[in-house]
Length: 231
Image (cartoon, rainbow, N blue to C red):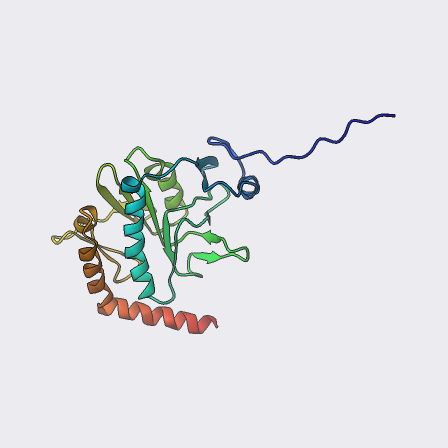
C-alpha cells in the first residue's frame, strides 16, 4: 500500500496587511530572522523591509536617541530601548523607534526579554502626518496608557509631544524659549527648535539644565527608594 508523504508544515511568512493574533504574529516573526522589523498594530501586520533614508529617518532617530540616552545615563532606574518589541495587548505588538520606562511601574521585562505593558514614553520617527504613527498606533498607545508619545514628522519638520490626560492625548505646548518638558520624567527637557534645526549641542545644553533641577534630584531619590524596596 502506497501512502502519500505527510506534507511538511511550513510557517507562513509575515505579509503586510495580514490579520493575526499576537501569538501567531510572534511565531511567524521568529521564523523570519532576516526580517529587520515587523509590527502588529490593531491586529494588522506591518513589515519594514525597504532601506531607510538617512535624512528622513536615520539621522533624526540618532539625534533623539542621543538626547534620550543622555537622560537615561543620568537617571539610574530608568530603562531605554531602541526598536524593542513591546507587547501592549492582544492586538498590538509594535516596535517603537525608542522607549523610556521604569520597570515595574507600567511595563515590565518578561522572562523571554520582551517588554510587556505600556512604557511611560514612546518615540516614533514618521515621514508625515499621514503615517500610521499618528493614527492606529497613536490610538493603541493611548488606549493602553502610554503616558507620553513623541512623533517627529521629519518631512514636515515638525515634532508632536503628546501627554495622556483623562484618557486623551493632549499636545504639549512649547514655552517662550521653545522648550518642552516631560510630565512623567522630571528633567527631561527638549529644545524643539534646536532639534529641528540640527543644533544638538543646544539640545544637550538644555537637557543638562533639566538634569540639574531639584525636581530631577528628587526623582532620582524616589527611584532609588523604589529599587531598595524591591530588593
